[in-house]
Image (tube, rainbow, N blue to C red; front, side, top):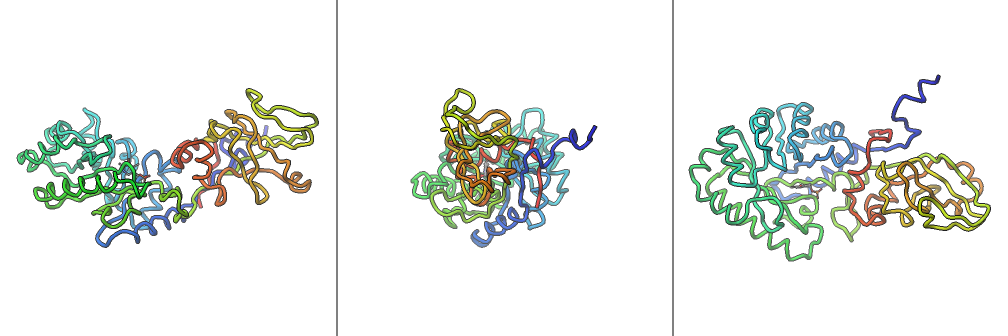
Length: 371
Ligand SMILES: *Cc1c(COP(=O)(O)O)cnc(C)c1O
């Protein structure tokens, strides 16, 4: 028996290359865009958008990042073990009732978004540092304007708590012309100034990746970019200022000549005429080749785009390689799904989604190579 054949993830099962150097350069690029006095944090939630927090976070740390944001306490605890004590870690979705002490002991700052959460935190953890989120207009997480007024009026609570950061999140930062941006900016600025009057050391944080590109007024003390670090275009509709980070290559497991007109894949949704050539690649919707791309998406080989045909299956995807010449077809071993030409944003367009979902869907069946 060949041990190599059962050894788990192998480059021959699909190769996902993640360029840590590019992530580091994207971090530095965002940092120099910030207003002076404003720090650049990094959002590494959801396993660094699917790219591997264990590799990505130390790479950012080496570039000087000391302000990290995660979604859950478990992610925060893992990050704390990885990076040690000298970084700030904010948990964006708060803290579950009953987990307050564990959160404080791990040195994580939960983002609290109700007055009751803040009261509970102070009752259980005293002056353990925390963050507060105010809703400036997105209507998702955050204290409502009414609740925020109650917070400002509760001097006793403000004295008892150690609120290190006030956050809010922009709903339309990727649409620079959207009036919601200016509206949220006004609300956040006013909330921040009023709370700072009572808690002078508090840091203000509003911008995600796209928010950084809205201008210095949006930068405040700490920016919280995620997607742009990982190569997703933070300014849709304009050329992507970020370096590409991910390449994904799928091995071809079968090539076939079409001898008579046929239909490809589940549902027989798409026809191929006699004389054509098909290549079946290993990798399907269980590997983040989103099924919604079926019949619309493409792969990349020999310097050109090759259309997907038929539906994407769970473990395989079929491509029309008729456009290749004989020699190219003969030597074809793999087809790329993401690269510097076929970007995360383009692929997201085929699937009717956003680059974020392409990255976070990549799954764990690929062999991962970190550069
Ligand atoms: C995910 C997230 C971010 C990062 O957003 P990007 O658009 O990926 O830059 C920032 N802030 C909050 C609250 C988030 O949930």
